[in-house]
Image 1 (cartoon, rainbow, N blue to C red):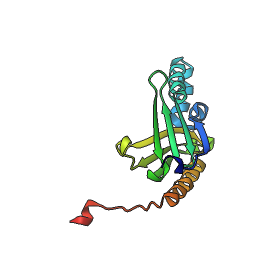
Image 2: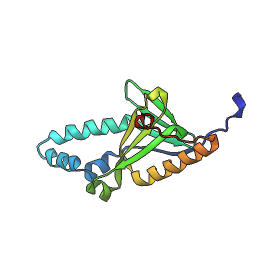
Image 3: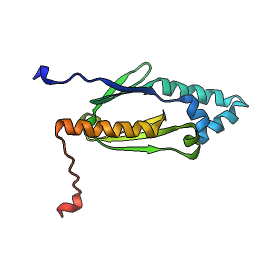
Length: 154
C-alpha cells in the first residue's frame, strides 16, 4: 500500500542554542568566568560545535534527529512510538527559556533508547506541542498504550 500514506508536513525545526546555554546555565556562567583566562573560549567552541552538529525536526508523523559534522547519523522516531517526554531546566535555564528534552521511545531501531535534546529554546512549549502531536499520531493509527510491569505477572 505505497500510495495510502498521507504526506507528512513539517511542524517545527530547531537547533540547540549555544547562546542561551551560555547565559542560561551554571556551567555557561562558569565558562564566561573562565573566558577571562582564555580557557572558556575552548569550552564555548566545543559546545558550539556540538550544538551545530545536531539538528531536530518535528513533522506531524516523526521526530528526525540529525547528528554529526564528519560522521553523520539520522534517527527517525515515529511519533506514535514516543512513550514519554520529559523536560528539565534549572533556575537559570528558566530565565533564558532553554531546557533539556528527554524522549523515551519504544522504537526498536533505537534500542528503546532515550534521546536527549540539550539546550533547546522554548523547551516547555516544544514539549507540549510534541505531546499533542504524539496524541494525534496515536489516534490516527489507532494505537493504545499498555504498561505492564514484571511484578504484575508474579
